Image (tube, rainbow, N blue to C red; front, side, top):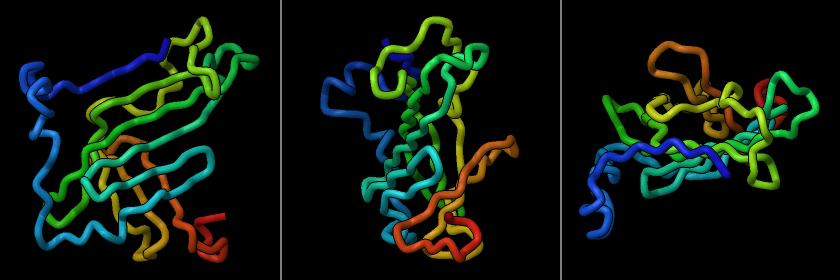
Length: 162
């Protein structure tokens, strides 16, 4: 059984009526999301950004139970809601699901200690050092976290994508 943390911004009556409009931000008319829409990759994970201002972060890490080096790897999938604020693209984690990699069931003893994301984590999403094929996610709260993701055309010569 996967562990799921979900942000519920709307009542059930709104969901039954066709979805929560609060989760669909109005895009800034002067912001061009096009260059960000892509499936970006990093070692052990990926970031998929969609035209509808949604994104998904996927990670594989392990062992699932840090105290047991023989436990299997975990797979984590975080859903983000994107918005533009002050000319910056921001992504906030609205849901996070952790499962046992490739099987779905978590091993006994899993306590969430290795979980990468938490509902509410917010990131600035920007091109790393102006490189159009390298994205960087940086936490807005100053806490450690964030990653660099590479596009298809990012060469190993950038010193970032290998």
